Each structure stands twice: as C-alpha cells, then as structure tokens.
Length: 98
Image 1: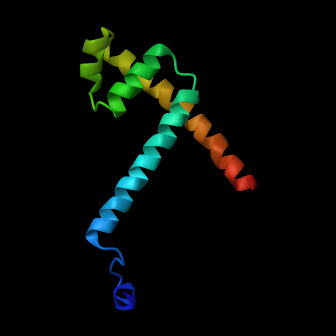
Image 2 (image 1 turned 120 degrees about the vertical axis):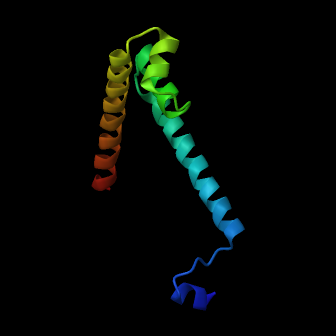
C-alpha cells in the first residue's frame, strides 16, 4: 500500500474507487436537489432546467415539448442558472466567513 502511494497509484481497489465515485455522485445529486427545491424558479425555468440538465434534451427538443421558442428555452435556462449561481455565491461567501 505504501509503495502504491509512493508510485502515485490509487490505494483503493478499482471496486472501492468506483463505489467511492458513486457515493460522491449520489451526495452531489442530493445536495443539488436540496438547493433546487429552495430556489424560486418559475414553473418554466424549473421545467427547462430539469429537461436540459437531467433529461439531457437540447433547446430545440425542449422548445417542441413545451411549445415555446428556441430562444425562450435558452432564456429560461439562463435565468435559472443565474438564480442558482446567486445561491452558490452566498454559500461560498458564508463558507469563507467561518
């Protein structure tokens, strides 16, 4: 194990490492879900955000599904991201104050 560390190899087995990566992703997804519940997205902002990031749809696909223009889809996503970044900025500022 020490030799692995010196040679800059992972000290975890591939299985352990993949389980660690999965656990980190799950924690990240839970934290993002909690954040998103507390951000005041409009109905459309929430729909577009979810379709774009969680369902991996393009703006063209979103615009067809929601019967909105391509540009409207982009605008809703921009507004949703701006709200999310504001919350993240406040969290980052609070982290630095500790």
